[in-house]
Length: 184
Image: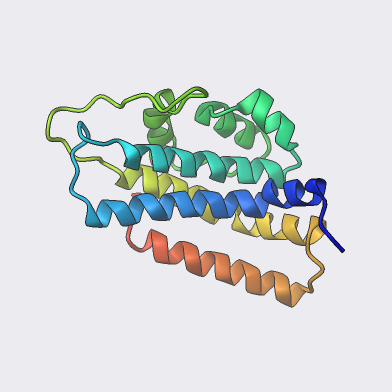
């Protein structure tokens, strides 16, 4: 049986898919940071990647909490602060102050129409650790809810399959987080 556009779109915008997008963006930023020594005034791709990763992480939680993709697009857009406020209103655990500060730092630059340059002194290198830590904190906090959502709406697995998926997500996230300066 061939999948329809609705089926494909449903999987593409599922909480689990958004979780993986967020994780992939954060991994990409982290990996590039390890191998590139590029000053902020030469490239801000790392900031853009981390902001996108945080956005997908927050939207993953919101999808797991029943927010429709259309609402994410129309009401939240690319606003990290709106996504955070909506997530908190839907019972996301209060993030550590460092997570909130990191999101507040990058949010004005991550806009609906584009990523807007983050001012930096000539020769400064990106300070990604707080942003990566914020994104990985969110992903870690929401992993169980995202897996539960997947098996309720998309999976046909058992409790064992759900546990296995959660362990895999946490192991993948741990590989990324182990390379990030932890939050205090």
